[in-house]
Image (cartoon, rainbow, N blue to C red; front, top):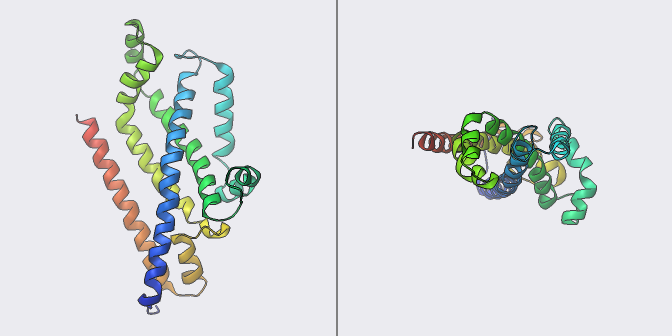
Length: 221
């Protein structure tokens, strides 16, 4: 184990942590929002559901099934032309964050759909029988009933996005993963690697604790 020059390493760690927070924060917020919309679309257009539409459901379902199984790094490369069109570049933190947003959206969409499908159909049918509109059912029944497990699902999403951010160095996005690989692993400085790992683990544990607490609080209201 080598000693760490904190005067040099401290600012690097702070910058890398800021880059990771930037990427993860935007990906979770933007990807989570669009994932909620896509997941709702999947659920509502399912055969026999409120807004049944086989074409829309099939297109959304196929898109998710194409994106989710692909290794993230391969997907980032394949998304290059679209990334260039949106952010005018294919490398750097903006380009990498855009790709993370896309993957997070499709990953969270499936989580949203699965949680909504688990809701007792009788509750939805009762709301329909009372004349509630689809939008009212979404706001007052679906979101309310699925909110607690959705929070847990989004907590899992945060952990997955942190995992994706570790590959940022391959496209010049920086972050904690890049710091651990470039200044730790490649220079055989295991002290740096373990410090970065500890920072990531602590951050993930805090997110998990907050997510579990919110979920329990909402479930017990």
